Length: 179
Image (cartoon, rainbow, N blue to C red; front, top):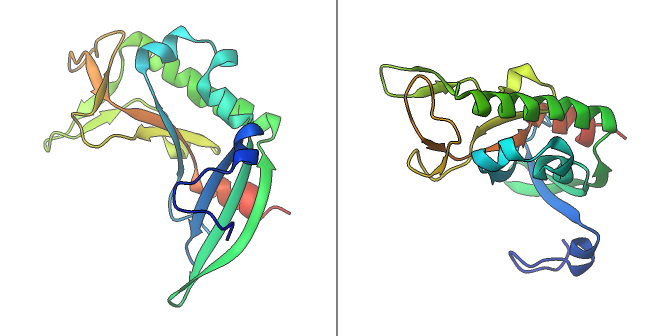
């Protein structure tokens, strides 16, 4: 659409600090996936205050969304949109960030380990916040960052890489469907 090769950057967008996000929509206009941001290091998360956090800086960026949707076998461009997150939604996402800082600081990460060895965490879930949540963003369970405080349940001193995500429902309702 923009005449770029795969992975090629747009110089003007980079200079203006515009985040480009390509979204594939399902038939119900819900994005196929939530939107991920870069992983955070647990130690840095608790050392940096909200005002200096990478998450806040990303959310305050200007975004350029490109929405596609399959129509039968063809991928159709539905909409492109420049967008800034409203201040009240940034504050809502800040609650997720604050909860993560508290969880990591207290070493209260793992809630339970299932019979299958799956670790359930206290990290903010998609159902708990309309804007954002936290979940893994790693190659596998061994792809970890060090924890500043060992986990109280498991004694782990490192944990699988995680990142903040924008909820797909938020993207649909507040970005794609809004005029």
